[in-house]
Image 1 (cartoon, rainbow, N blue to C red):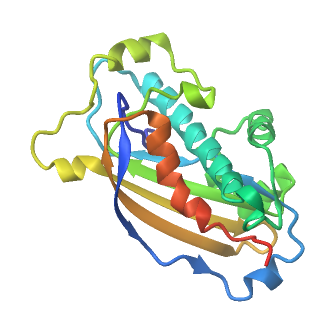
Image 2: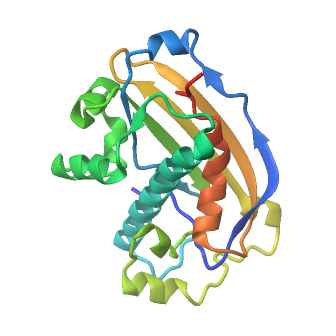
Image 3: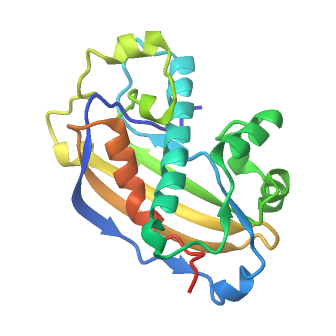
Length: 229
């Protein structure tokens, strides 16, 4: 089943952004007072665009998995980066991405499959107090993910490389630019939604994948709770 992705020859997020007011559960600090470790899960990708006919279902699944991990890595890095120079330090540790993904692999779970598990089971499996989920909806496929240490199959790159901007939509270009993102933190013990926020972006696809992905995640990362007062 194809959930989502985006093509990337070039891309950048412009500052045409709409945001929902971040949700915090009442007494967030009290409820999370004992939390020590939080994991960031692979993101759920929803692709709504055209598909190059040369790409198979297997190819699309590979792109989806790669993008899911790229957004996961980016959000992790953006949250840590939001504490530079000692500002707004975190009150919890973020579980390293390679540990999170190693545990998922050991349990034979894909980034998509893990989202269907009960919250308590996810937290227990990862040995964390809470976890972050993200969902990205867009209508372009990304292939340039090397900056995240993620390689895409040569066949996929061969198919997508001629489509510098894929897919070309001559009509409503504003629709082709939109990226919808949403983020949430779930408690691993009480199955509670602790925090959530959503954004809509208009993307200008003229720079690299990491520019698009990092900019998509940056604003949510700055809103990330678990901050030292």
